[in-house]
Every structure is written in structure tokens, then in C-alpha cells.
Image (cartoon, rainbow, N blue to C red; front, side, top):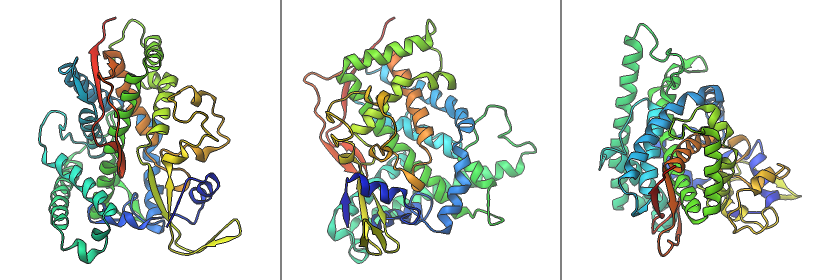
Length: 416
């Protein structure tokens, strides 16, 4: 394995049309996610599914999801209002918000993660994420023969069955609804079409996707879209609480956009105008990239600067260190959103929170709209404060970057 944060090597790997296979560790997700877009190697299936799903993330389609962001954001603000003045682990709130949003966006149903405590689906998704990370990081769990003898194997097997049963039931229900409806339920102007419906109506090589293929992609949306967004939200709010000057700048932008009607829902145009808030999100992603390390595999020998990298070598992209390279980010440990106002794009591979190249994250525009929507709502409702004494993060990676001692802040209701 090669682990690197060298710019030239990362540009070579991520821009390569041939280094498209995922590293071996992604196989630990196959029992749950199959070989959908996230976990598949860069063969014909991946290319066809990528081509199939890319139009789903066009801005004209994405802006229809804003009401979903807004309604779930209202639930979050209501919940936060009940704990104002207290020190809270904001991740406990943000990741449930993100789960509700991605489930409603991807499958057209709400799991009410924010309202229903101890949801079995939520617990199983969280468990599967932890088990995959634990297997990746525990040498004796990596070989299949040893893993099959461990309690984790049976915990994973049980959780996968329950998650698949839930997804299958939603798929069956949507198929029935689409078959029984004389009018397409998605034809309502301005209404968001769940990604699941797009999958059910799509064809590959002239045939519809199999139920298993649909489930793989639906589960992949859930996996990719909840923990990453929840973690990013938490780090942004933590940084805003710790940097009052940045928070004030971000709030002034909100006041300029919303004027006297400070509590109204955001529109697509509003979100597009939130340039400084976008810089805040990007700077948070630079310091705390949601996926700090990800891998590619050389499916065939490749030549890099005159040297041969053999076939079947895993190359781990160290995003965390790349983002703190002083050559590209002067004073790299400082939280300074204005640095993104000045970036000219001449070194596009120095900032890669959503990966880059042919296998970049298709959902990055969706994620940015979701983050702007909810962060704007929170900023307008609450003043964010550090705890006393200020909470110190203890970073850990469970595939997604987190703080194992929580991400604690204090919130106070705003008055204008």
C-alpha cells in the first residue's frame, strides 16, 4: 500500500482514467451495499450506473429538494430550542437530521429519526458503519475465515438483513404506487422526485434495473449521505462557536439576504447568494474533511514519473494532510474562510473533500445546498457559543472523521 499526500501523485491517481478501482477495504461494505456506485470497481457496471445517475444531480433537479431540507431543518431548530443554554453534543442532533433528509430524498419516505427515539433502522445503519471501520482497523478481523468466527460477523449479518428488509419494503411499496397510479405521483410541478423513483424507471442496456441493483444504490445513498453531512454540520457549528468574528460575518450575510423577514424559509436563490457561508463550509471541510482517507487500487500496472506502480496496489489518498499542507494553505491550522475567496483553482487537487476526477462525489452540490439550508436556519435562530471550558476535539476516523469525545457547543436563542 502507498499512503500519500503528495500533490503530484494525488493528481495523477485521481485524474487517471484507468485507476478507477476502489481499494480492498471497500469489500467490507459489500454485504450491505453490494457493488453499487460507491463500492464497485471502475468496470462496465460502474460506468453505466454513473452515467445513469449523474443527471439526477443537476441543479434544476436538486433545487426541488430544498423543501425537504427546510422542513427537516425546522424540526432540528425546534429540538435545539429545547436545549438552549445547555452544553450539547451537536453531532447527536445533526446526524439524525441528515438521516431524515437523505432517507426522504433518496427513498421518498421519512424514518422520523429526529422524532422517534431508538429507531431500529437508525441503530442498524450506525452499527454497520462501526463494524466496517472496526474490521478495517483490526488486523485479525480482516481475513474472512477469522471474521466469520467473530461475534461481529453475526451482528453484521443480522443488521444487514434488517436494513435490506426495510429498503426492500420501501421499494415494493413504491413499485406498487407507481403501478396503481393513473397519473405519475412525481408529476406535481416543483415536487422532488426521490432517487428511488428514478432508479425504478431507469434502464441499463435496454432492461430495467433489478431489484437488487435498485437496493444497492438506494442503500448507497443512505450510507454516503447521512454520516458525512452530519459530521460536516457538527464541525462547522463547532468552528463558528469558537470563532465569534466569523459567526458575526456569516450572520450579517444572512441579514442582508433575508432582511426583515429573518425567519422565512430559504429559496434556491437565497442559498446561491450565501457566498461567505459556503466559504465557511469549505474551510471547515479543509480542516476536518469528512472522509480523511480514501483509497484507489491499480487494476493494472501504471507508470508514474518513469516508475512502475505494479498491478493491484492500494493507494491511500491522505486528504487530512493534503488539506494542511502550508504550500497550498498558508498558516494551515488557522480557521480562515476568506482563503476560499482568493483561491484561483490553479491547484484543484489540493482541496478534495469530495474526492476529484472521474470518481468524485456526485452528491457534492446536493450536500452543499443541504448544508447551507440548515446552517442558515440555525444561524438565524441561535447564537453559537463555546462550552466553558472550551471543548477540545479528539479526532478519530470511522471511515468518516469524528470526535470520539463528542462535539460540544452551547446555543442561545437569538433576538433581533
